[in-house]
Length: 135
Image (cartoon, rainbow, N blue to C red; front, side, top):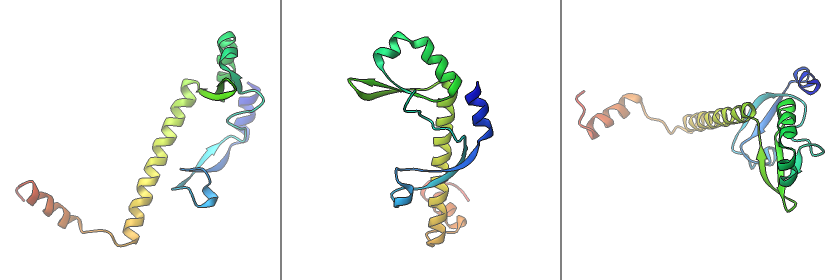
């Protein structure tokens, strides 16, 4: 519980990118989110072998619930799986939806700025003609 209380006090704004290397110009978009100052994966406690996870499943589930951090499970020394609790996985899915929405808005604004737009009346008239909808 101490970790959760500490995280609640250290919330800050963080920029995330759609690709690795936002500052290098590789990213498609960036989005500001609020996130605790603690790392999402603690290299000292959140990486374990699949065999270890099988032996100590209940202990690891409790750790995931308390910290909110996913576990990275290895097979033959290489990362193979990531295990999340349901709530943090749902937050991850919702964040991905928001990032997709932001990307769509960014593209739309870019099109407007570049002049790649048409009046809505013209578009509706074209749809009516193509689909033989009475006006």
